[in-house]
Length: 354
Ligand code: NDP
Ligand code: ZN
Picture 1: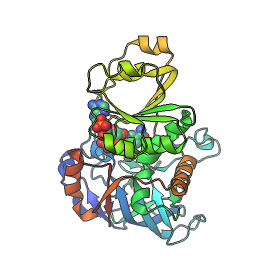
Picture 2: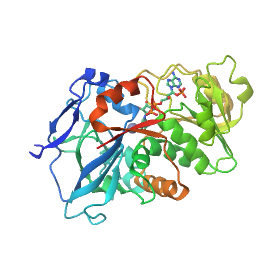
Picture 3: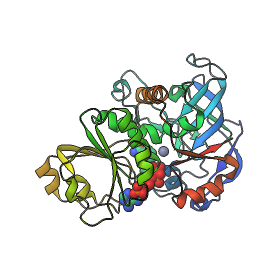
Picture 4: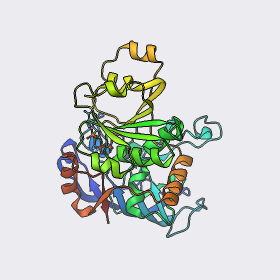
């Protein structure tokens, strides 16, 4: 049984909600436990996953759903086991809000919580072993296990920190794990919310050369301002020829499977890595074995990032003054902003503010 407590949020009631039909209403959060915190939500970034979920693009969603997993707020209540936070602390919650965290879980004890079998996503999911539904951040309040909340460093404004909680960590983790850094040439496919963080973090980690791999050159001025060396436009015929064997690592945030996967792989050096983090609703493009075998390239996927990586990303961002490119809107206007987002208008993340 969920709690009888009432929170207020913007609910998606069916697949049409993605068209800008969220309804402001109350919902019952999970039962409050000694390990939980309640937060008053001040900001929530808008991730493409919110749209996939609202339209049931990855399979039938658990309606009513409250999406939003780039959440910043202040703690208004804490369970008695919560010793790491005080009431009033400013914290962030990302796309994962629980895992088993048991001593005998290989993933949880090896900095790999996103792959725990008891992982709970922040929305469109249920807390393990209960009927309690997880509700996200398009809301005034949220209730989450404190173990997946993160103190936001003082130097990081909330609207800058919000989109890092999912969009940022989803590229920070694979960049870090796959060697982005000095001596490396890194490509980022798809310059949207995740992709713009890909450029910022690949640079912050010290990569020698970082290129945006976009469909056109429309975002050229922006990616140069983000620190990239240049932009590669994949709609230009023969684009891959000049870039053969140039990249050590490519992180792809492409949100559509209609992508030139063979060409992407052809620009990797032998032994290079292609990490897909974008999660299109369509199946992966057909692929020949040839490029994988003859070039020894690694084709990988990656989900979010670990708790320690989130903490590290926030600290590095505060220390280096990394700034997310955001446009902020009152949360009350969420339905209008959803339409702008569907139209691809974000430069590069919309953040809703209460
Ligand atoms: P955005 O819409 O902000 O950006 C997606 C970008 O993909 C676009 O800006 C575009 O870049 C590029 N793109 C779109 N169509 C194509 C295409 N046909 N071929 C190549 N590139 C294309 O989305 P987000 O950054 O918020 O999210 C990206 C994806 O990542 C989504 O599928 C989302 O669900 C997923 N995701 C995955 C996570 C994980 O843990 N793995 C976590 C969070 C999100 P351009 O115009 O430069 O070509
Ligand atoms: Zn997300």
